[in-house]
Image 1: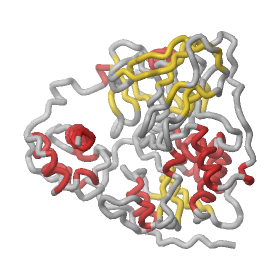
Image 2 (image 1 turned 135 degrees about the vertical axis):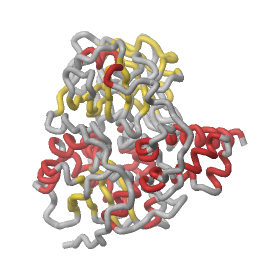
Image 3 (image 1 turned 90 degrees about the vertical axis):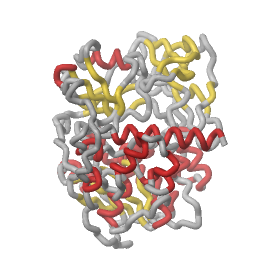
Image 4 (image 1 turned 30 degrees about the horizontal axis):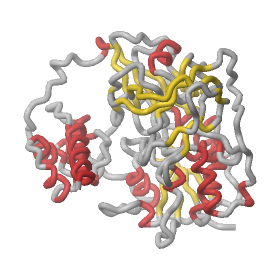
Length: 448
């Protein structure tokens, strides 16, 4: 029997404790019906967009491939419902830009049953075949990174992984979809952990869960294998405990060096929702066609955790949860790291973990959100979990000194958790400034 030995570290330094608003934590996962039309963007991940393999007028089955990956850092997409390909054209996205999408007119009698799958013998596969099997599912990181999961599982051989860290913290306010997956789909999670451990060289796994989710811990512990290779540990509830660097610090007592990957210090981090999909879809040869999403906020009449078909138009979803489509503010993701939605006709994509809907009168007036000059209070420095100086970075961003931000003040170490913006008494949109700076720097690199 293998014993899991690790050094339990102190909780990470700094961070914040925003109100949790986890009112949906005890609401079971329920299915959302199909919209009359589903819009499947060909680009839903880090890397190259997929290439369509269907044509206009073609009938497709629920689960059938719609687009194939264009290279290794790319994933396929599948039909979320049975219907007819009505168009392949540009369509608006949640952030504004239009992107090539496959539009399916759903058959009125389409069922929720998956009608296209290719079950496969996982035990008979070698490593390359197993990686390809994961790629065929189209799974991407569901913790917010949307990096193709199969590519992340290809860890360079020169960096042996000694611990698989499974992230079940879900520290963002309002979001509880990961919580419900751990409670209701723990068997899928453990199956996904088994597949990942096999590809990583069979290291022990630690599932880190914040201590405000005792029912999730109990559900997982009830199914743990007896050999002790997989354990579950509670960690302090603090934001951003769910960041990979923070969870590694708390569970293993290790720090990820600047400009390094976690596997370079022997730790591989994966989100619970991602691994649950790996465990549920890969053995069956199914595609990623739906995901659990938390829908919450003051404007939602029926908040909860919904199993939503990919490509569902946001406007249709709002109608089905009794949220008015007018005079509301909509956020994809959580309030700390999410982004405001630019178009209510945008579809739900693989990276959407939550949808928050607020009435305009429930938010601070725009005058109250006005920003003021930095008063050098230091609150952003005290709260930054990466030990950066957000105040100086913000002042450099205002002067467009992007190179100095990156070279001298470690802009690349910022993972945009939003703690600096949250604590700033001057209402300076620091994290938004950092995102713009990174976009500019990436644009320069691509141009060069």
